[in-house]
Amino acid sequence: MRTKANPAAQAFEDLADRYDAWYDTAAGRVLFDLELGALRPLFDGTSRPRLEVGVGSGRFAAALGIEVGLDPVEAPLRLAKARGVRVLRSVGDQLPFADTTFAAVALVVTLCFAENPAGVLAEAGRVLRPGGRLVVGLVPLDSAWGRSYGEKGRAGHPFYRHARFQSLPEHRRMLATAGFRLVEARSTLFQAPSDEPVVEPVRGGAVARAGFVALSLQREDAGAG
Ligand SMILES: C[S@@+](CC[C@H](N)C(=O)[O-])C[C@H]1O[C@@H](n2cnc3c(N)ncnc32)[C@H](O)[C@@H]1O
Image (tube, rainbow, N blue to C red):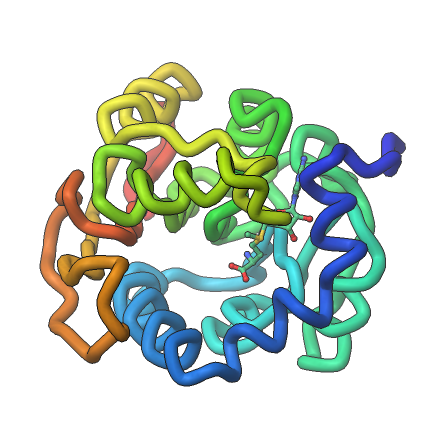
């Protein structure tokens, strides 16, 4: 099993506490709730077990009832474990699970940090049961938030400098190439990233100018879930 951290994962190892503590800031609390509000309905009606790939410190996994979390680095996994998530250390393009193990697989702002996102999607498809759901949370590059994070990355931000943000059409193409079809979507963060974050509604559908988009997908070859 390959566990040597890529530079992106190494940043989350080195700064795990800082990453996790951000969720407890005033801005972090608002953004977490908005993103959770977009993701949660996509798990309604999905069964178990559930896996999050790139689980980080496990905030979303714990809130979404995801039992198993995987990440390439140790420090975030310790925090996820303390939140009650069963954790495994590995990379998303080499999942240590048998085919068709999970009813749902989540990828929350992880594809942009993986060095082989197509391989991560192929593995997610392999471990999903027929009719299972892939739930992807992403920051579209074609949103003000994606552009802002990209600028921060170019200025040397410790996390965003490792991210390769992609537009919503690029995500759609990558997911279709990996054999997934879109079932349902939610979008939020229509406010400007420069302002103090405020609560706002989550909208139905995938909207490129939203700062956070949550997609629910099924394998093309899957029967009804
Ligand atoms: C932005 S964090 C997201 C963590 C968590 N999903 C959340 O939203 O709080 C990205 C995570 O992806 C992980 N990661 C980086 N490369 C990865 C890979 N190849 N496979 C799986 N996870 C990876 C990082 O270690 C990090 O924990």
